[in-house]
Structure formats: C-alpha cells, structure tokens
Length: 116
Image (cartoon, rainbow, N blue to C red; front, side, top):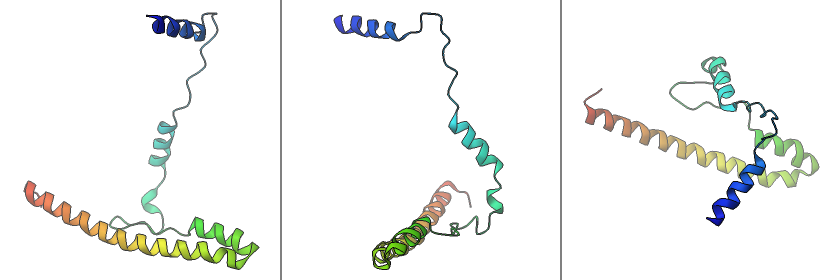
C-alpha cells in the first residue's frame, strides 16, 4: 500500500484544489484536419486520377538538393540527386507490381463472394 499512498499524495499535489480554473481543452487537430480534408476539392486537382497514383508537380527533396547543395557545389548535389532518382525509379516499379497484386486480390475476393 505504500506505492498507492505515494501516488495519491503526488496526484493530490497536482490537483487544482485552490479553486483555480482548469485550462480550456486543447484544440482537436484531427477534427480540424477532417474539416479541411472535406473542404478541399481533391478530385479537381490537376494530375489526380481515380485509377492511378497522383503525379506530384515537383519533387521537394530534389528541389531542396538543387537549391542548396548544388548551389554550394554541383558535385556535392550530384550524389543525393542520383540516389533520389534511383529510389524514385525503384518505387515506381514496386508501385506498379503492388497495384497489380491489389487488383488480383480484389478480383479473387469478388469471385469468392459472388460479387462482380
């Protein structure tokens, strides 16, 4: 019971028993994010498609390397840019295979459930 007594003592010291107001509730960031998500016309964005991935207008990481590293020293930026290019090419190949697997799994699930 000693641990319980210590915990109660600490909790009692933290309670605002002096009549002070409890601070207002913190803003609900998830609720705000959901509001923004509903308000933005995502389907109207250029490059958006229902059947495939959205191609971004620019690559933020590559832009950062170009505007910082390449400006300081072109050789310094060459390595990171090459790595980003290789990573992007690999992700594209994996994404195509992943989408094909997902479509095959969806067809199998539909066939098993009797739905087209």
